[in-house]
Image (cartoon, rainbow, N blue to C red; front, side, top):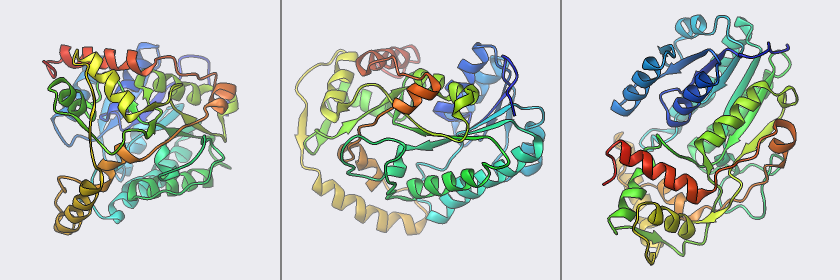
Length: 337
């Protein structure tokens, strides 16, 4: 199906999450009618929903298994951008991730096809590549997910492709994302500002982070570009930085430049395994887990040539500038001194 001329009517799932929240704001500001599907599990998510409501974006609170409410929200929508997912719940079993990430995606696809939605953009993750990948990765690189989140996101990609004969689909593999509104990196900014940060390991592993506004442009292009249908894209920043380079840029952004200290990684890796085995069977969130250590040990470099060629997407914000903007937002929100 052809998309109508601007504005495109967008339904964004996961709109109480960092990426979905920012995408909904920017799409609405660009003149697109936006419906936000969201869950509210904490004050941060509630605040994001309140912000969207104040901006005139309709917010529908519904889990992915609430078929009736979601079907109603999908009426007359042109495009779904599906970002809702189980991700950081380290205390949950893999069956939980499968229920949300795989079964929930299938439910949404079924309802999208039934409702006549014209395009389904699936927000996947670079986590499908696993760890310790070598060379420059792209859409054709083999998948080797190594945790419940990555495995279930890869499985959900397969479900999305099952629907490609009846529904125009696009898969966007999203890199580490940061920017105003990101609460995940706040601890890192605070630790560097207070002089309490240390790098676990040698700090030489690579990140190719994407600034959230750049990512939003890429997702909107995936929602509209004719050549995007049926394709899989990596959406990442233009610049690869090591963990130490990333920490140094953030330290400069919070006006605390200085030498980065290092400690061995292996004691923390052992402690993470022990805490997972102790806390997770009890349904408790472990204070330290292996996925949290991925920041210090996974190393990725990506080619975004396909996104550039077919979407016209190229990230514009270098990490140092993005870190400065993020630090400024934290200050404005009184989250940093």
